[in-house]
Image (cartoon, rainbow, N blue to C red; front, top):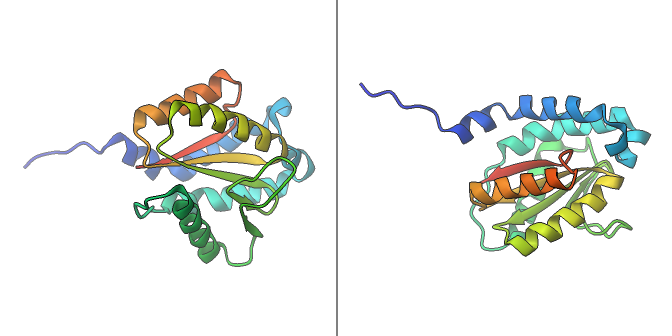
Length: 169
């Protein structure tokens, strides 16, 4: 009889709802980093984050060829699971830019696939802008763990650790 240790990524995502909750508690106390949405509608933001976090944790990307296909798949996945609880927009044109998915004008999701260094830098700038307006989460697909770590370190270095990163390989 052999004993297998669970893979670390499985442990992390199994605790995904707990992680989102811990992230939310940690970051809601930092007034300087709050988005307009968090200042104007803290209860709405909490409801959206608590609802979307576990749904996002359960998403299983299909292995598409393009980033746009991942965005469409995630959008359809969310539409199927949140009913009419929250308004969903895909690629809305806003004064802060064009987030991939905007939920209830409170939570922006930015989906990226296998980022290069230049794309990581642009992602940090783009999501910094989004995070002034909405709670912002980055969804990385087909991205090696080393690059996921590089994104998280870059966000921390730029004082953007309030932006949550979800990774799917």
